[in-house]
Length: 114
Image 1 (tube, rainbow, N blue to C red):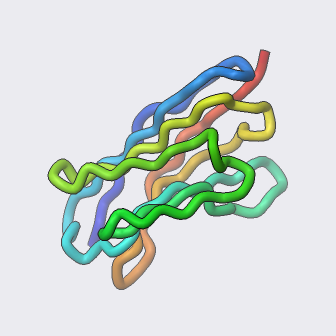
Image 2: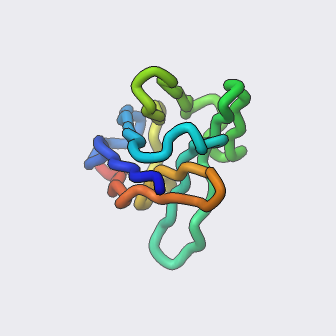
């Protein structure tokens, strides 16, 4: 079992920045990939960014150049730095850890609005 606890999120104006963090506990050595997904109202959950144990990253086209994913292997955390935020980035963001199964955080609301 892996437990994920998210922090961060909130309300920000367009063009602003936010940082999300996710701390993993439990069977952390079974994790191969950690990432962030988001789900906007009326839409399916989609991948935002992911990072493997080897440090390889993958980003959705919509966030390339604006978002960055970081992983602290010693502290077992993954963070998402979001810059140049747009109203279309408004969604609930979920931390994900892939092991034998997929594990999910509780979700963090990010609202981009003036």
